[in-house]
Length: 266
Image 1 (tube, rainbow, N blue to C red):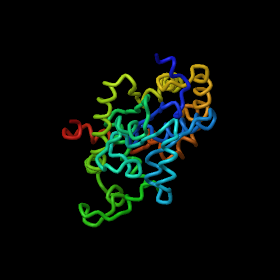
Image 2 (cartoon, rainbow, N blue to C red):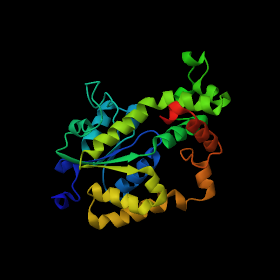
Image 3 (cartoon, rainbow, N blue to C red):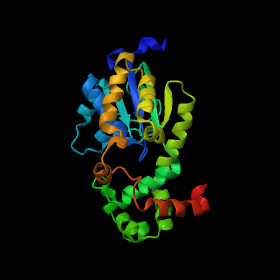
Image 4 (cartoon, rainbow, N blue to C red):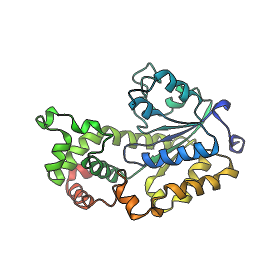
């Protein structure tokens, strides 16, 4: 009886998992569920942030993971971080809930059109964001150039081809995990495009699937929308947010180049 799960916490053996991929709404998902956790007294944990933070204590991270009510994995479907499991081949679909020791779970998997995901990632990398330090590493396949240097001078189609190599594993994880989710009633695939078109209705559907208390969902949606629905942001907020790429001047040329390339379309 799903109604009996409403409001359950990790102490009850119940866990909520939010799975995303690079450029499928990771920043949005993190912001929304951190806000919900903070304001409604749920414990939130970001699996990959702990992995990517060099000063994070593995033991402290593991303890936080074991008590979290809401867990975000922004490389969903890929191999789990070593601080969570000694098996280096353990992947994050379903096994994430097993490693967590949960007796029951609900999953929200945020997906996006693969071509839009690819181009958004490319535009993001062309901006050379500070959190993507690998962009400044010299690469043998680029004859000693960094990826950032290559992108700065390459043609649109060469940029797209190169990004497809970089994004290949993440895109495969997105597609395979989408198929896995479709076969599990406890998982819901949610399109990032739906958040753009109707933020409140989409988030309400996700929160209900994740079994948050019905009495709290409306307040959760209203709070999250007031802070994180980009349609309510000012032009300056949109332009200065490094994660938003939809208004980028380069997007149209990159999409056109991708659509003209048969291998990329396939």
